Image (tube, rainbow, N blue to C red):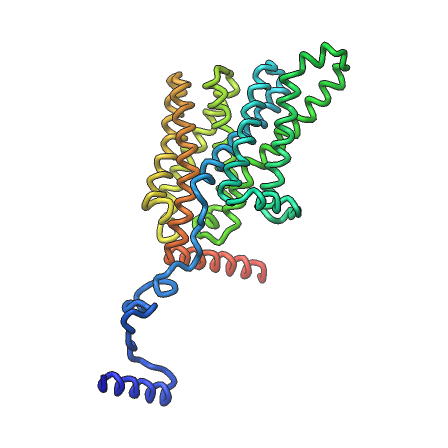
Length: 344
């Protein structure tokens, strides 16, 4: 005990004389600072960013909401291109069904329905969360009204409702469904990219595009499984499979180092690799061989894995202080380069 006190006195004298202490100091048993703190990254090896606390419902919401939103967009495209009304009605049914399922999934994560309603009290166009809630509400309204109109359209015609007015109303509702559906399918990528979670922030340009095209091909795959073997749906799914193959290769090859651990290591890395295979090469080969149902099922499974993979990647990334530091250094270098170019 006396030796410890003497050492503390010497450290105090050195600090008073030189203004600094060269000694490593003393680790307090049971204290909050680890003994090897000097060798640990970040704040003594502790997470520098709070990990997301989303429940399992959010991963399913990302999949269902994206698929529903792009089903509405496909319905609008089908109406504009003169596809059978049965096809448009089925696409609207998928959109409305997804909207009905999305709200409970989102509310389940929030914990209380009142929290969802409180978000509707204000409209903040700069807030991705506020825009998302309002978009989901608008999309649900448009999709429900459009689906109901297409279901009872024959009955309305028998009541001598002017066909021009009926067609105009149908187009307006389907257009509202399709346009709000695009926002619904992509805003979640914007929401993730706008956070401080390193892996999400580093891919803030990729995520909205990635979520949007995966939702589009998921909607096309569901419609194919329901019996609509249209060349346009197959073309959509083929194009997205090619794009997803490219995204998977880019994530695997171009993204390296501490700033990309979350997309390569752990549960998140495995899920994203599985998702990359199921949404890229596997459905691409299956469609080229004419195995449309197998390709559709593979893609839908991969789309679910992709959503959960990015959520797990966010948790992994937030808990890894080295990835946080690497991301901050990269951002600082980019800002410094941009400032230097502007100064010149």
